[in-house]
Figure 1 (cartoon, rainbow, N blue to C red):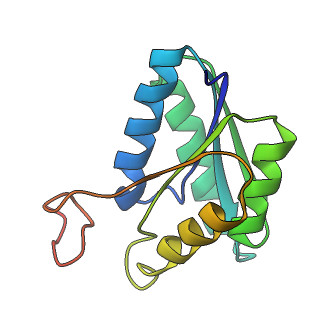
Figure 2: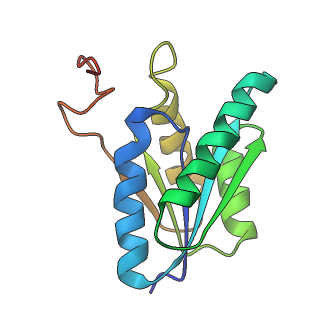
Figure 3: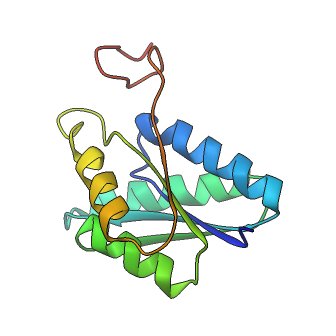
Length: 138
């Protein structure tokens, strides 16, 4: 059913559950995995940190993973990337980066759901998890 899954993440702690759920789904269907992070700013330190996080992530997963960091408007970049790799599913969290950008991925997830011609899996962070609204990370 799913041969290629694109996981869109901003690499924050609030996105970890979405990544875990999407990886579990990919494992169940033996699907190829692409992990995508969209960079909106031109900060080279932020880009390096994101690329390092993606590379570390790929090493820790027990299956082949393609990682990508792209610049652009997040929702349209996610949709274009997913279409470009012929994905069967796009997975994303419903919350964004930790403060002060915590509102961000929610709007991105909504735009991806509205604009993507592919199925989109949105994964909500559970109350009590690090980075959840109103809960501080330990």
